[in-house]
Length: 284
Image (cartoon, rainbow, N blue to C red; front, side):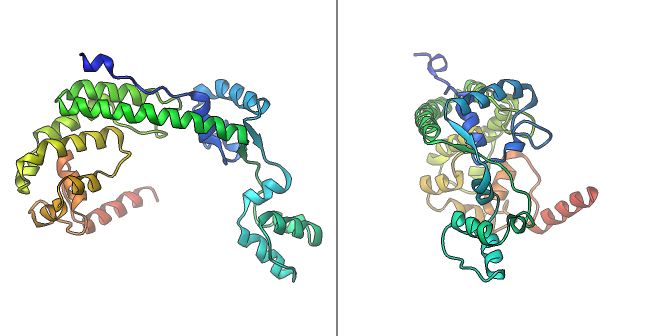
């Protein structure tokens, strides 16, 4: 069987990914300016979906009291009520209605801007849940198949497929959804493969391949705690790091481990803070 051909890449649904992305977000942040959640080249297409989703009863835009409730914290409302010697019992909607009836909506407006928000209807929640459940099944199976490829030392092919999957995300743009490019991921995997770190910290050889695969998977998907998995595979891995000479930051051994694997210079935590301060000063 050709494992490369048989791997099925999970399929994103742009519309339902969009529903998940915009729920509970401010309406004005959807399509305009630097705050837009949607890449400019997809805004026309997504706007049509947005309008159709409202018609189909998948989403709605808050207004009136619901917008006020969503815009502020409960503490903001209780403060106004206390200042006006009014009861503070009830949920946020009760508090807002009490303020409007007994004080003035203007006192609420003085707190800050009232915004309208995108909300999913019950039908929208059902559709999104069905999609996410099915997508997770595909995604979990996909990760298993990629792991098998890494286990079989098919590193290059695994990296190509992972990159194809990452590129299929429908709302990708610079700085919006970061992932390693194929070359970055492949180069990193080769560094992991060639690294002598496991020998340096005296990890028994029987664990080397399993832990390398765990690192390949971490840099490919980044949706699991590789430190925890390392400890599950070899209880005491963190102690091996702490005892080793490569770790400068004994309180953060995995941080130094990560730097070593990627070929970065290992610095102390204090040195890192000073470097951050220098960078921040450049932009002040």
